[in-house]
Amino acid sequence: MNRFYVTTPIYYVNDVPHIGHAYTTIAADVLARHHRQLGEEVFFLTGTDEHGNPAARAARKRGITPMEHANEMVVKFKELVKRVNATNDFFIRTTDPEHILAVQLFIQQLYDKGDIYLKSYSGLYCSSCEAFYSEKELVAGKCPDHGTVPETVEEENYFFRLSAYQQQLLDYYDSHSDFVRPATRFNEARSFIEQGLEDISISRATLEWGIPVPWDESQVVYVWVDALLNYITALRYAKKDEDLVPKFWPADYHLMAKDILKFHAVIWPALLMASGYELPRHLFVHGYLLLGGQKMSKTRGNVLDPFEIINRYGVDPFRFYCFREVAFGQDGVISVEGFESRYNSELANDLGNLVSRTVAMIAKYNQALVPQPPAGSEDFSEEVQRLAADTVKALEEVDLTTCLERIWQFVRSLNKYVEESAPWKLAKEDAGRNQLNNVLYNLVEGLRISAILLHPFMPTATCEILRRLGHASDISALARANAVWGGAKAGARVESDVPLFPKLAT
Image 1: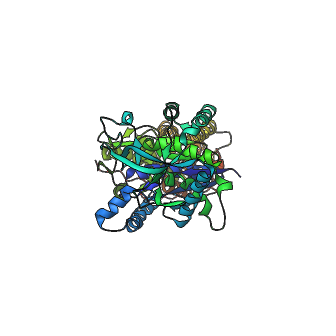
Image 2 (image 1 turned 135 degrees about the vertical axis):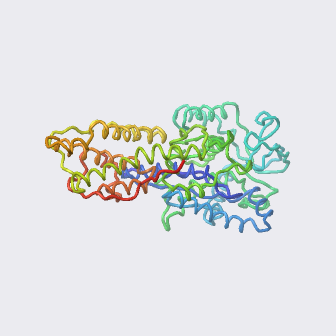
Image 3 (image 1 turned 90 degrees about the vertical axis):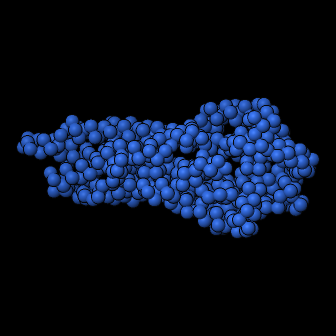
């Protein structure tokens, strides 16, 4: 059996979740559901990053301990995962005792090998990023991501010999041209390395809220090293009494936003090379969701509450909109107005109305039973074969937006087919009975296949579509292998119900 391992970044707990966290989580879930449909064994990991200065400051501001703060925030992140209907196999916390021990073992081995050493250091540090910057990386003297002036930090820390892996990293990039996707991010990541790498601090002497360095407990592990290791440590203890590393590592995809590309594309592979692990097969870097022309961030305070959107419109429309409105991998502007417009035009009109019309016509013209099409009648088998291949290819390349567009082209063609074939006219003609049966069957079959292909994006609505068409909606029925023409069952009873996507008042 083929296996597939996908991760989100672990989310920082200095504040409550926002729509950006939901965006990456849903993307990972789409891929996980798709690979389960292919019959593969899947491991989908998400979780929370709980150490470091910002979390400690947030706790101090609230008058509680960092652990108390983390325990409260992690509930909200777990609730987000549940509300977006994500099917993650494990939720890791960097405060898990098992993770802490695994991190300490990992860096101890690098220290014993000679890849970690002690030195004094002075640098420009953004506490919001938990990262050091050179003067040339700043924008008008400020952090390029948070727009804050970094502080000068001077202390004695332990350093990882990142520079020793520069050529090995370049060689890897040159032999793995799809390691980072999209291609623009690959070029950006390679340029980081090509410009020259300096050794990086992997500990902090002035922090208490972190994992103690095992050979020197006066220091704690740099939060980014702690966080990156989650992708392997989780596999060690996610399943009781079984180490899943041999089964699932290397990861097929790490999904992330572009602000953390350098950590994942440079530091993470170097750490893996130093420790003898295989590198992840791919990193996929998506853009920012922009609200009012700016990246949404907790620091700026311009965030959309995903819970509010889901409460108002439903989780499936939210999942759909995330990848329909903004090309996955690029920056894009989102808005409530844009959401409502796309909901009404595509979900309510294109898909929801098509389901309602199809069920109503079968109820009216064939006693609510899916008709048997005449032998040799026209169908969409060749078009569906191309559609299935195109959507698999798009998802293999993590092109979620193109996948949705391709499916929507087919949904629109079914609507056009209704208008051109005019079943209401055929029903009035005795000679049109066979053609009517063919049209109704084709609509049911087209919708059945659309539901299978759309399932990773809208799992609840697509199961409901299959139910209304008289089909089972279990895992076996949703398998990708069933997305071939001819699976609709003649004689199955369709069921009318309330509109699938009630139109929003405008």
